[in-house]
Image (cartoon, rainbow, N blue to C red; front, side):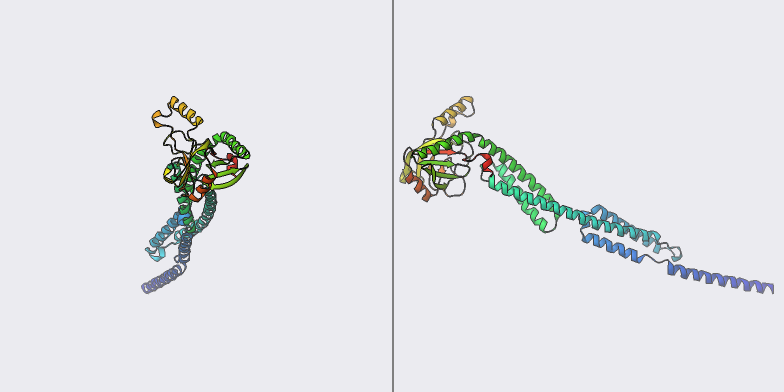
Length: 370
């Protein structure tokens, strides 16, 4: 009797235990669920951050978000491998939420950095544009060496490339190219400016010779006045500019002519010594001037004596105002070239002994820039 009662009681306890276990299992199964919403939020936040180019503009923060997401997925996989009663998704959920938070920060950071970079590139490109325009206006036509010209051309090319990258919204690459462009253009401008300042050291002599040209003109003479930096030949009559023509000079026109072969156009007070036309000149027409004059000869002798140049080099000669110009570049060996139709006018207005005054600039340096 007692045995039966014990067996029944044992069966009852076992049944109750099973029911409690089943109930607990059902409760656990229903309450302990994987953090699907948090995982999806983390995944969507990562995708959003990447769309905002966080990989380019907030790469470190994005990497942190990706690492947290990957850790969350690994933890999720670990919990899923356990018997469901022993699963705990707390860490998985926490990592997913932290990943979503980091992704949001990465997106905001990328937007901020991108905007700041965009504004910076806009400012630098605008400054570069003005710098390039200034160089082309004041320096590009100077007799610059190849290194300076190449530096400017390289900088301008980088500027154009930076503009293309900017339009493609690649502000990082645009910034890099703009920086390189600024370095090249600035170096070219600095070198050119130093040369220009050196060129204008002779302005006091030019100013004196310009006054002489106008005074001779006021006294009734026809005077030929040549301004090298403005690339013009001016006919003065009665103290006024009567005709003005575009002119082309020696390849190395900046500075005075020192010796034969330097391809420089001389500066100073000269006169026409011979008018040439037909078979007497290889050009259309020509006016030979008296280079070297006494001043040129004195300077040359002094340079030879000091050893700056060899007497074998020679002082040079045969400097003319001639036709066959209009090429748009400085190309002669030191002469002044005009278009043929304009050479006709100058030729007809000139005679032997007509003053020819050649200066670097009629304007001082500060006015040149204005």
